Image 1 (cartoon, rainbow, N blue to C red):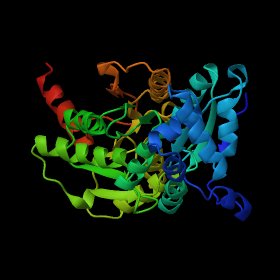
Image 2: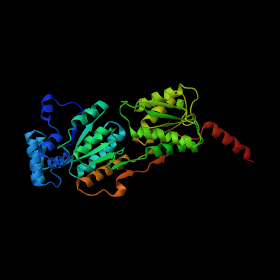
Image 3: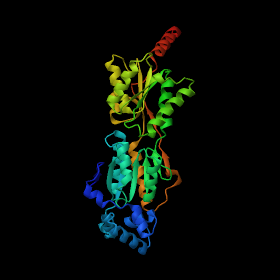
Image 4: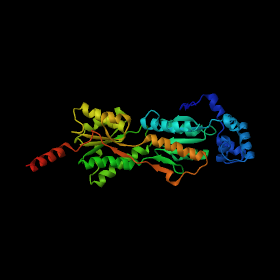
Length: 372
């Protein structure tokens, strides 16, 4: 079975002309709702034969998704249903790992997968303007995709089953972690070690019109943990860096140039933390003697650089999302405890965090005084 990778680029003029008619046009021509038109074209739901016939006739008349009409009428054994995965980034660890896990499960269940990489706000908006999913897929997986109200309204109009990973879209099942609680767990670990001056390396948005809930939630968790510990928020301890190791190194270098070095740093993502480790060591500082560093995610490289982090099971999230989608496609109800699943995160202790050096020195001095 071959997976199809859909391009972000606009189709050539000849293809755009054939896509001139929208699903709404087919529905209006057939005198049915958009949801009924979508189900009729997919041929996988209970629709009255005469209704499906009207929709198919309207689609042919408007030259709308003719291939989908043919698919709906092909023999059951000759159909190969498809699912769409829409995501803002494909090459980054979280997105590729979750997608691969979902894809494996869907493929095992006999589905093809169309991947739509919407890497900027412009590409995302253009995609939802033409919305090339109607008649092509039976369900959708939205992978931490920042959506505005008009985007979710467009998805609802399709009448397709949908599951979201890493974010929540009202009215559909989702799976992920509590990003606020996850960041609080990381900061509390540093607080428990005696750190009070704790910096934050945040991921800079690639596009200001994108708004990733993970990043916003983790920053909020950082602020909450400090507030609960009675530590005043200091904006000079917060820096942003572009996603990736280079971004983390750049952000850490910026933090080092400011007065008052923090004794510990939380990076919103492990890639940023790994870059911070590199910048600290390049500056001649020892980790964790001079500065402790903790990340979030537990990417594969984290254990090779001895990075303390808060781990999430992204493979399990991708697999569960596929299971949730398949339940909807089969007409099964999703159990109440599986509608919005927040999986637990866990602290993974390695060698990049330790009590502040001054605290270790004071403790050693006190211990020496107590010894006979």
